[in-house]
Image (cartoon, rainbow, N blue to C red; front, top):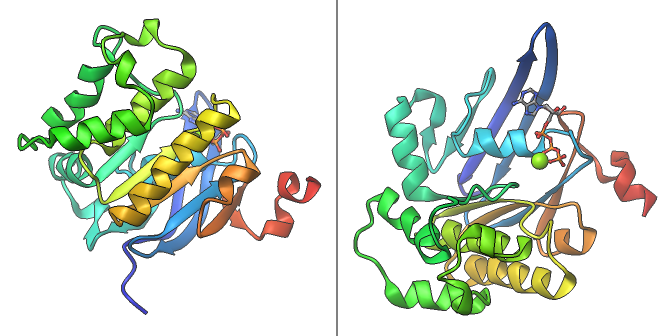
Amino acid sequence: MAEAFIEARNLRKTYHVGKIEVEALRDISFSVQKGEFVSVVGPSGSGKSTLFYLLGGLTRADGGSVVLDGENLAELSDAERTRMRKRKIGFVFQKFNLLPTLDARSNIEIAREISGKTDGDPAHFTRITDLLGLSKRLGHRPSELSGGEQQRVALARALINKPAVVLADEPTGNLDSKNSDVVLGMLRRSNQELGQTVLMITHNPEAAKYGDRIIHMRDGQIVRPEDDPQWVAR
Ligand SMILES: Nc1ncnc2c1ncn2[C@@H]1O[C@H](COP(=O)(O)OP(=O)(O)OP(=O)(O)O)[C@@H](O)[C@H]1O
Ligand SMILES: [Mg+2]
């Protein structure tokens, strides 16, 4: 078996809110091969977004390790981890995190500037924004875009640097079925044509099927599909 591209081992994360402790992740282990497309499903609050923050090096784990492309995130300095994230990971946040004062074009291009990849690929920009149906909205600020358009801008921003890993947190959460298909098709193309490893959180079983396989989470752990109440209830 080839060495895993992403290896999560015994990951733990507890949030502290006042005196209350929330165990968001309790001992999660799994691996993902290079070029896989994995869907992550599970009830609200089961720890999906937290898991992505840890995989993407945005938050430190309280225990366990993440090895991404041979690098143990815990052994990197903050600066090294940030650098790795900018170069290798495309993050689609559940809440988009677009910059309100910038138009769509700049919100997408800023990811390239931040990564230091100055050798811009204008054809790639055009291709992605065309495929995502954004070409006529590039001059709009987030407040002048619909929720679904903002979501597609966030995806374009995540893909602009051709990252090795795409972590997409509910990329179709606000979309109708037509636009969901556009976004899912884009992720599948990225996966198949550019060989990008894609992890996608979704609440939509139809969307989840785009993945090569599905990871089910519940109460901060990975469970068997039959132990995922929402999945079984369908
Ligand atoms: N910054 C935080 N501080 C304290 N508790 C948090 C924080 N972020 C998340 N939590 C808690 O940790 C648990 C896991 O949250 P997480 O956002 O990972 O869930 P999720 O599976 O992504 O849910 P959803 O499907 O609603 O997005 C929840 O109980 C949540 O209330
Ligand atoms: Mg979430």
